[in-house]
Length: 301
Ligand SMILES: Cc1cc2nc3c(=O)[nH]c(=O)nc-3n(C[C@H](O)[C@H](O)[C@H](O)COP(=O)(O)O)c2cc1C
Image (cartoon, rainbow, N blue to C red; front, side, top):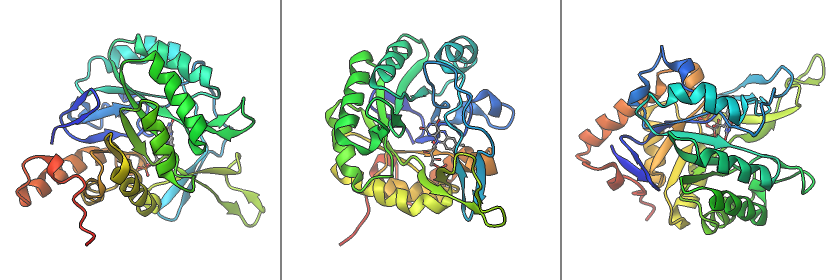
């Protein structure tokens, strides 16, 4: 079950997805945290962010829409309040970061590079680029390349770039991120959507639009992971709608070296552990000794 992602050695390929597992302590009484492959914390910014006004979450058919607005404690409080607990855990800790300008991403990377106990940085490039007038880094290959380069210059920790699905061709952005120095690519983030209250004729989310996650997005995520894994030279981490072991196994066959579990944590906080156990059973049943032998084995001929 052990896999390598850049400089990270994981005892199994199952991680928690950013924003769905808090800073891990929230799940301490529910999940044996030391059994996880890695823990990815809520997206961090330079300063604390309160996020959007409620309602920020709406349940949809086979999924949910969220417009949390990247609420987080900020890098300072992360280091002083959250890291002491996180350092006591065995799995590698991955800091997810976002900014509104390239300089912000670079400053965050520099700060995190100096934090002992953070093994890797996952860069969320699906946020508005204020300086470029509302363009999103993750949908523009040149902006993506610039932001990843800026982060790469500031850190020697493993660098994972998290890709947005809200693009025409995800492989173009993947190539830019890889060229700029990403050690791994994770995908997908949420798909932009909306829901309307037909009696009030108002959006159900105060932010009007939000990000769709959960089982509804799995087929899209699987397709994008397959497309990226075919061309990327760095490891790909699959995310999107994983609820059961079989969902994760589909991602491995499509080419993912590891997976992240998000929305499922809200339904059953122990999903990660159930998925780990189910993958083990599958490998045993098929006589596969190393999970790497399953990765990218999709037969299309
Ligand atoms: C409530 C919520 C908050 C999220 N916050 C973040 C975040 O801070 N940074 C990030 O990169 N992704 C964030 N995501 C996206 C998830 O990490 C994941 O990419 C997405 O939900 C798809 O996986 P899933 O279907 O397993 O949930 C968030 C998702 C949800 C549902």
